[in-house]
Structure formats: C-alpha cells, structure tokens
Image (cartoon, rainbow, N blue to C red):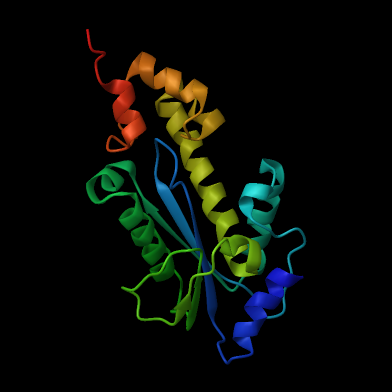
Length: 205
C-alpha cells in the first residue's frame, strides 16, 4: 500500500523510530484540540488504515483498538478550549502535538507531521500536505486523535446536554449554531472564535 511505502522510505534512510503525528479538533466551535503521535511497527500492516475523515465511526473504533494493540508506541496530547482561547488555535494545535510526542515512552528519531512543523522539538521532521492520506503512521495518529476527541465530546454531552455534542462533536452545524443562539456559549465553547462571538453579540436595534 502506498501509505506504508511512504513510511518505509524513511526507514530505508536509517530512521528506526518514526512517529506520525496528526490532530483532531482544529475547526470545531467547542471542545479541545487533540493530537496523537504513533510509532508503527516496522513490518506490521493494519487492514483498512486510512485518513480518519474517510472512516465510518464504527470502523474507526475497530481501527483504534488495532492501532493500540500492534503499534510500538502511542502518545496523546490534549489542549482544552480555555487554553485555545488564550494562545490561539494554531499554537494550541502545535502544543497538543508536542505533548503527544512527549507522551511517547521514548523519543522518536524522525517525525512525520500532518502539515505542521514543530520547531520547538529538536527532532528531524517533515510535514507532508494531507499527510493522513500519504503516511500510515499519520493515518494511525489521525484515528487515535479522532476517537479520543469524540469520546471526550461524549463526556461533555453529559455535562451540557442541551448543545447536542454527542451528534456534532462541537462542529458548527446548523443544530449547534441554533443551540448557541438559544443558550449562549458554555464553558467549553471557544470564545475567541469569530462564529461563536457573532452568535452571542446582541442584535443592533
């Protein structure tokens, strides 16, 4: 498979502990941004592994457990909405990714990062565009990050049931927008996001 060949090309250059990194939750109006770092086995294959956005929810859960069971190492980093508001979403995304790398049991010797560079980490790295479609380890990280974030949003739904987080996971759907208009933002809404602010400003007379 091409996504496995991409990772293998770096192993052929002498790198032995390659971590793929991706995030979930940059775009939503509520909830955390979650990143994952995954070190794939050198010769292992996971059937159906691909970009999490192209995987149905039930299949993502199956792939999630397969990744955890067969991969060498998995790390996760989470930045909550309050911190996103404080430092902005791009910096929060990078910070979540850094946390995910540091959550690994040992440091990788090469990073494959989906479209973002992590200059604060002094590790060789490359940032392919649409990396989850070209790299197996980035695709695996996208699955882990997506499932972890979705589970967190299900927990938030229990605390704030009026927003319907179990359905849209904090994205700006019509239903979510209407709920913000009806109830105002809750503590996990990203108050610095323009769309959230526009829904909470009073209408001009």
